[in-house]
Length: 113
Image 1: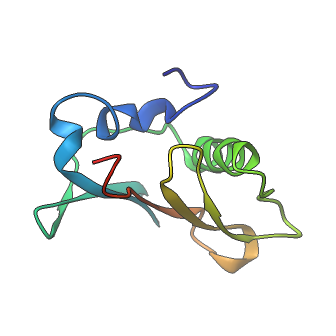
Image 2: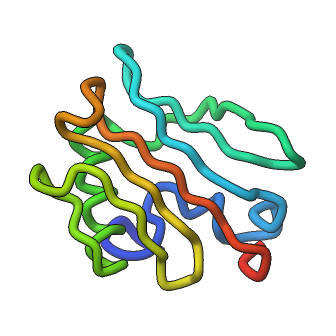
């Protein structure tokens, strides 16, 4: 799955043997860049890898995912809650609703796990 479709830079949390145990992925904006966390075994774990170059890339990624889900993520619609094609649920908040940058949570359903 490339950066244009699918899960882009977060694909490792959705494909492969280790992905079966991941229940959710969170993108949290901070003053020093984005922090990515993943849920596994009932706990949240921070990642050490940098998945996005900057806040603008996170916004574009979320806009693409939301567009694929049929729910636009724009300045006029800064909060989106949608079902992705694989059954995962994405919640995105950005623009003026999240002053530090775009925040997102993707929750995977049991069949995807």
